[in-house]
Length: 330
Image 1 (cartoon, rainbow, N blue to C red):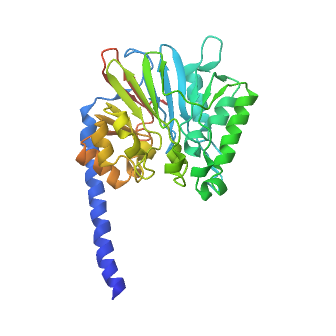
Image 2: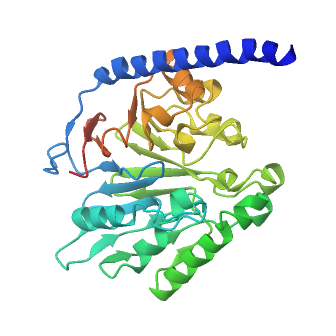
Image 3: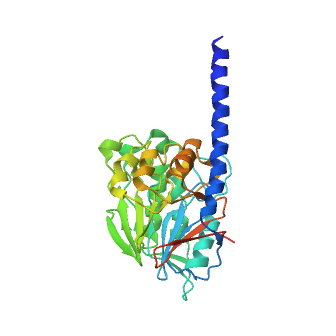
């Protein structure tokens, strides 16, 4: 009898969740029409202050561009993922190829003013070693906090090899003479962008055993009154959303935290930030139903997915507007 009762409860609940998820997907498609998105042509007609959200599956790789200078925020997932027990093809070649296509100067070298790693999970930092070691790419500075081992889960050490990823990145930086900055500045400028960093020092006593996501550094970029927040893997699950949201304040464009998985983009977080646009480094179908609900139904924010659109560029114009283009990988 108990199993029947459980079935009567679980099955209708799953059907309800499915129907709600379908409704939010429909709303996503409707809201997308608020902004015209055209294919990227790389002619620079909208200006050169651009944020390139690369298509690297369910991982983060974001290229900043301003006044002819470039920088990388996270490096995406490479070709060896310690979480996978089978042969795995990541996004190493796509990332390296894109950087060389967009950032190469007259010397034939792709110049990155800095590479900024928000934390050491493989889907953010896994490709950093390949970027550093590529002979046709020069990274002038590496920004990355020291790893706080006291916040790590055991499985992040034993199965995900987070300490190993961290050490290999530092070794690669040392071998190519790229300076490593571990004490992060709270504010600095990059071209026309004013940048503010959040969670530059991990509150280890509060975040103990919350995992490496609790070390995520958020980045706010501002130009001409327009603001973009790159939320790394900041979520309510670790407590970072509640800890940081009042300091972050209003933003115009939100890069959704933790790829739209459970615990990201809580209603209180969205209320504090009040974004007009959301970009997710994932496919729409993999965003958790409650996250899509919070964004589409509660906040009425259009969501644009890097996977569905083969990458997205957000160009911030001198007048303080944004132009979105897609299919940046061609």
